[in-house]
Length: 372
Image (cartoon, rainbow, N blue to C red; front, side, top):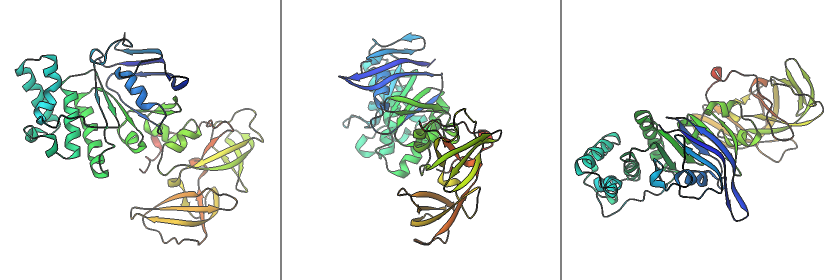
């Protein structure tokens, strides 16, 4: 099985509410990623599912059974932590076998399960070694192997890659994605890194201040964020936000005034928008050199030449905040020399004064995947 339901889950520490009335259904075999800034409640929520934190209110249901009062060992879960938590005096074999020995499993069962897990994680040649002889990525795989041998219904990962360098993180993302496909198990993964979320998840749960801001597939969150927080958090670099004013609504969308120009955005109109202050959002990767439906005169102050792409930070008249743009390849742009930047109305996002998005009239399946 491996189904999980969170029903109005609350966690407080004294008078401080860390998790606020969270409800979520996770289906069998899903790879779910909790993502959000530090302090948003994602690790606390994971620890509540694991049984390592008491639930102040609400229900945690695994495979139809309420588990609030069950100890972690009885919940059918296995957790992999940020720290590897390996026993340095034990071999890799004994580290992986440890939970089975605690359960009193027969030696033949232990040997088979450890060898099977080692084969999956490419640790066959390392079983006789101790953790001190392994790289960071290999140690993390040992920790994952210790979870695999328990054959849990649900795997929980609490920022397992944050101690690794950039190259190892990329390798381990691939390893974990392959592992999920191979095992077909339900996995819940916590990270503050939105690139990990975008590349690994079936669905992403974006948390903010203890609440769920949005749940959806990676490209759904990228192309159709429901509010300014999700729009700014998902995507790298962050989305640009420009002040705008609604001039009217038409059958084709909402007409706005922005940076002294008028344009109609293909978003679902609402009643009472005319004259309202709004925010126009445009992702840096959707900005081009030259003219567009909206064209801005900008002065770059920092240029990052990465070879594959050029990232620029520019100032606009009357704005202190930098306007970001990402161009493909190497471009001959110089600091402090004005340029024209344009973008299409179809690539824009529009948010009302509360920060809620007006739904974009776009086909996500036909959109280009984000550049990460």
